[in-house]
Image 1 (cartoon, rainbow, N blue to C red):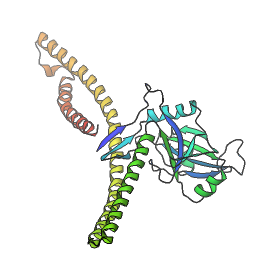
Image 2: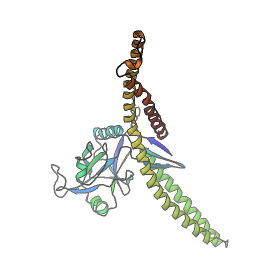
Image 3: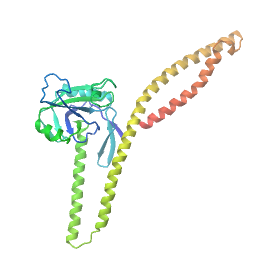
Image 4: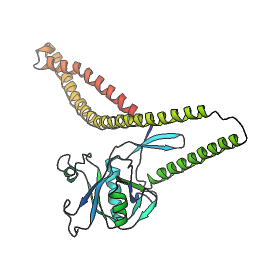
Length: 311
């Protein structure tokens, strides 16, 4: 399955995030926590005001997408998340909010925005949110009693989801596909009813078995998606660690080159003096190091093969 990195295309006039949506099932799988003014220390926040805090974007988090028959994962890098969070504030979109990516909301404002920089001391840890470094966190003040009472307090919405010119269009496409599928299912049901009215035989047992198999498939697919999500997360970690392996290998090769250079100079000097190579102090040790370098080359080549497979 493809893995697609979404970026900010600076060549486009419209780019970045347009709004923050409060949703029941956020794609980044990070619920927000509801805070009152006593739990979060903000100036000019009265006791009657409510605040929601949660993850807006998580770096390298695989997010499943389906567009027709095309299934794939998207993700955002730390750099793209940082740029998108800054652009959102620069454009003055703090008050842009929607419900389930559909209905525009009034009275919701992003009052805090920050990138997680420390795995231990970040503010998110205080509220039990163990998000990775590079995550874009946000606190939204809710000045809309209807939204707070009907959606937040009843747990109808459980997290944030961004919408803009690299995520929202795909989500809207998903909704269109879902609507098309519902129309097809309705047409099939109507056809079955018409056949019964006309006296045509309909194998209801087969339909029942089909529904049972479909329900089992949906359940198993959800379980499989959870497994693959975790797997892709591990693959991203491997890819990030490879950059450290590559940097270490380049440094190692540079030092090895120096050793090989001095060994050649030592061998030339030994020939000129008419003495054996191993008579030169440190020569044998240097040759042994050069020989053992093959093991490091093999490790690096295997690591590079794995990284190239991941993409």
